[in-house]
Amino acid sequence: ILMCRRVGCACALVFCLWAVAVVDARFIFPSFLWGRALLTLVLLEIRVMRIPDTMSGFVFGAGLVTSLIWFRPSFSDHALGAVTGFAVLFLVRHAYYRLKGRQGLGKADERLLAAGGGWVAVTGMFSTLFLAALLVILAVCVAGRFGRQVRGTDAIPFGPFLAAGIWLTWLYGPVFISG
Image (cartoon, rainbow, N blue to C red; front, side, top):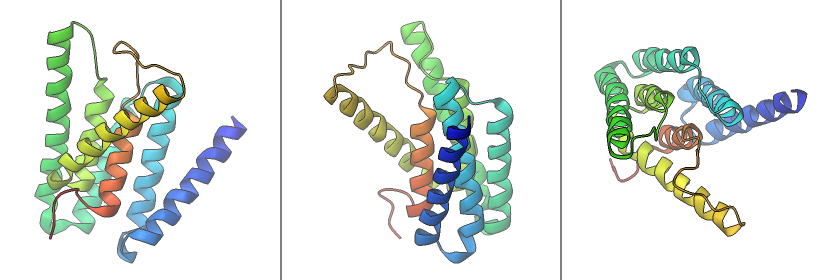
């Protein structure tokens, strides 16, 4: 447990320094909160393959409150991002279940993307999903390169990849959208 706390603290420091190096000074505090929340969710999912409802609910609420405070003129875009994030993965989860007869995504993934939508707005949803999918593919390729073949029935926690996509979109803005 002590090692996990040290790793968590070290990672939180890295997230904070990363945010300081990249974002505008007025977004340092929400970036620190967001990075720490994502890190906590990722560590939980890696450890127990689950994100508690209370955690994803807290992050979702924090995203909307942050958007209301820091992005008041575009708050509706952030609220729409939350709804879109939830709806997209909800539909994917149900479609996969109908096609394969088994779960392919957890409910926490749709709640996490809803929380991310509250932070990165609707314009960041494509970027977040694109980056998450790209990172999953990269991780599977790296695992295969090191002798760990990943099969279609293997459980892969998607939350860490979603969190990475959300974090990168938060820091650098949406992929493929200029302006």
